[in-house]
Length: 109
Image 1: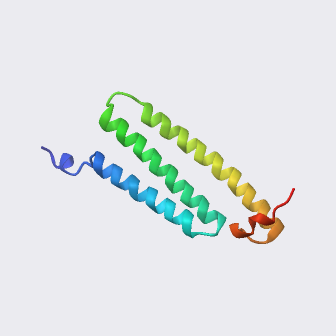
Image 2: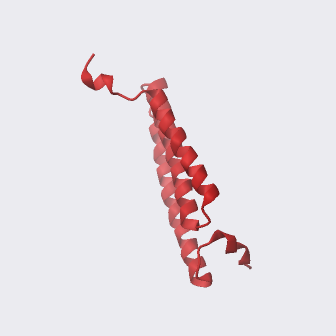
Image 3: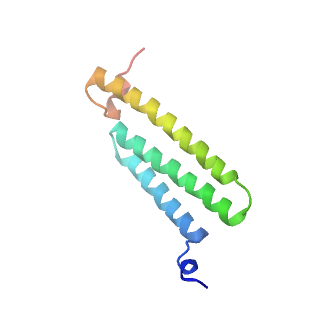
């Protein structure tokens, strides 16, 4: 057994990191009233899903590339979601001088 193999993270380690990211993302979404903070929480949740896809693909199906392909799709989806969300936040800030989500019910039309 080599020294490198001693410290190689296993499936349980990666799932633990993914659960920690998921919990942090949910906590951020539930506690923040700032739209950018909520967007960061959503990004943490998407990263947790990507880690799960790659981890299970690596340790359950060795020769398949499905987990990596799903993770690339998640990265593209997250980039598009962030671009659209930031454009909406900028427009909301220009109209109301705040990005507090509690005041989003003032939108009309």
